[in-house]
Amino acid sequence: MESKSEVRMIVALAAVYLIWGSTYLAIRYAIETIPPLLMAAARFIIAGGVMYTWARWKGSGPPTGKHWRAAVIIGCLLFLGGNGAVVWAEQIVPSGLTALLVSTVPLWMVLLDSLHRHGHKLTRRNIAGLVLGFTGVGLLIAPGSILGHGHVDLRGAGVLLIGSLAWSTGSLYSRRAQLPNSLIMASGIEMLAGGACLIVAGLVSGETSNFAMKHVTFLSLASLLYLVAFGSIIGFTAYAWLLAHTTPARAATYAYVNPLVAMFIGWAIGGEPLTSRTIMAAVVIISAVVVIIGRLNGRKQVPHPADSGGERVQPPPVKPTA
Image 1 (cartoon, helix red, strand yellow):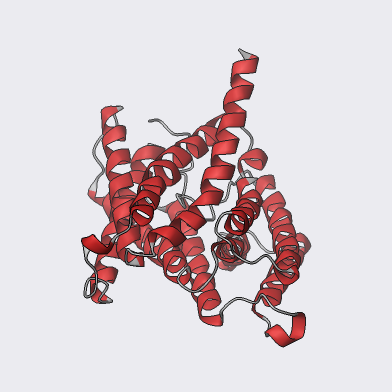
Image 2 (cartoon, rainbow, N blue to C red; image 1 turned 60 degrees about the vertical axis):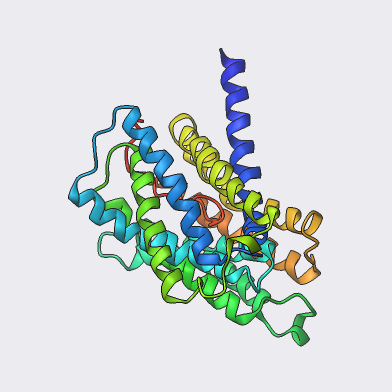
């Protein structure tokens, strides 16, 4: 029995590490011929519908009006604000660097939490992690003449940092929001609500004006299906299993493994540059995330998946029931 449990643990961790790390490049391929916001909307509406149906089939009751109101707020912040920023920014920022900037989510969460009246006050370790993390961001966005080539487009970096802030705000709000006890149901309605918000944003921004299905390539369509099936459903299921069967410290390791996986895949498969500046910034930012997550684990809190590529779903403060 122990060997089976160990194998399941390895498979679940590998799924979260590799699948969520790969979703950044999949997003890049998907948005080559599909408008970014509408692509994300399709992804989350399909995945959310599957998870909602799954939860109902497993016996979860229908969400109440309060559940749906909370889901709309969370869905807009996480999927429109957070993932929407990722899919838009990947038009001008390489997928590996996108993953690296998104990995700052735990830093924003600690900073925002400290500002709440019931939140945790900043400690020296928190402050050290914040300074280290944002120093790493500075290395990425500094002018090329200072540290050599490889800096991030300032527009893309700004959108990603704002998106990470929105994701962190939604994550903290969801800890106190009224959501279904079922982790699958809660995540499903958040995805459905977020997908609806993304559709509205895509329509308002005019993404349908020059879009035609006949122009969608096989690679983009296959990437979208990969994001739905693997990134959203299989990856999330593995993460939910980890939340119920391992320690917060082990489950949280995705937050600093995913950027490394994304950067390697982007370089090896996507042909994205991997410069000395990028490597230096990655070491600094991921070190900061390790420092911050160590503090979060001391509180028995597990941060959300930081990818937007990865499934950014706030686990309710109870074990999943579905």
